[in-house]
Length: 100
Length: 179
Image (cartoon, rainbow over all chains, first blue to last red):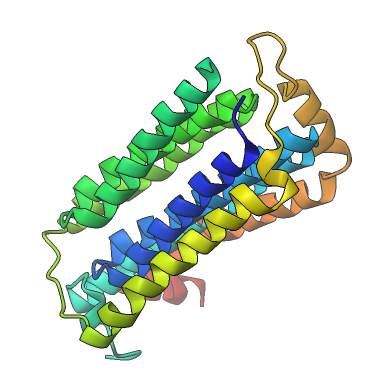
């Protein structure tokens, strides 16, 4: 028997790791991976609450989150490729102009 | 008891992978540790009885999305990231702030509320309640409209990815051919 709070704390740790990575990382791809980490932390608490209350809609929401994450990854990585084509860098500190 | 051991096993792997993602300076190492995080999260989902979510987690997240990341990293030949210096005020105030916040949240969750004492049901194989047919019934009846809307979202994402990654000259040539 595992208390529900353990799952929530684990999800919170993952979310905080994602926020930290988003703030301290300078590589644009790693920043993007930190966002995925945050989404995973939220997914874990969704599934934990679904198991707690035997409500399957929590699990269905996880699928929607996954779909949005997949769409976000496809578009985001395409944007990263477009940025790299014009700037030839992945460092977010050097991507500071909207128009070249 | 066995349940708790498995939870701790997967949880430790999960947190180790997440911390490794932050520590590594090469993006490909970060991507591989993110795969470790996602695979161990699938284990946690199995412990919670969500077998279908666990399978989808491995197939979609650890499979499809991370392959997309790895291909991008290899395509752009991403090297070591250079670190930029953070401000000292952020370190002085931020680190104690983060620790205090984390302790407060964990203390509230574990000790002070009713959800801290309630435990999740332990599941045995064969007695799982998150079966694919139940999820499908919910997804295709109550959540049918959101499900259809996500298909439009995916379609838009595909078109956006194609347009964004195609070379500017190719786009211009296509417009000239249309007009």
